Image (cartoon, rainbow, N blue to C red; front, side, top):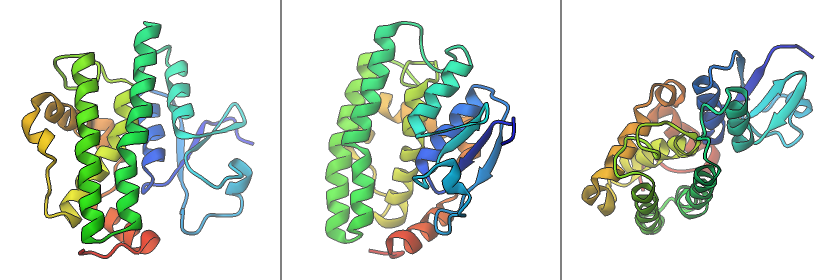
Length: 225
């Protein structure tokens, strides 16, 4: 097994994008190998028996799971991506958990039910989830553009790939729908613009066209609902 640090990813996977952003932000010297999730090579199961991305080979050892790799990037960079304050670190981890449990399900729920009714369910979940996100943002810092204010952290890394995809869903399938809270809350707007315009996010995101194509193949999501 090579001494090189190798990150295995798929461009279509938001969880893999987390790791790609983190490794770039941390300045970790590594190579990247893309895995076709619709036609996974047999050899990849030796890297990650679950067959999922992301995964990393580092010091000749395989490590998987997106937030494990994000925190690994932080550790390798001497806490470049997390504050020193243990309470603030705990707040970030809690905020990531809330985002994962209350907001991310909106997108996958729509993938399973890509209909007008599914679109309405998506809007309800996003509206409620973004209100939670707004509360978290204001509690952490009154100004942005990031969760911690002007410091980019693991929270921003964890949510950015999904916010990009939420915007794609709203543009492609929901007539450019914009959540009401986003119109009303400048802190939330600044945050969303801040994370999606971060160079490491832009450099690792897939195009809207590739996103739509993957949804059609993987989830049978039609081009119009």
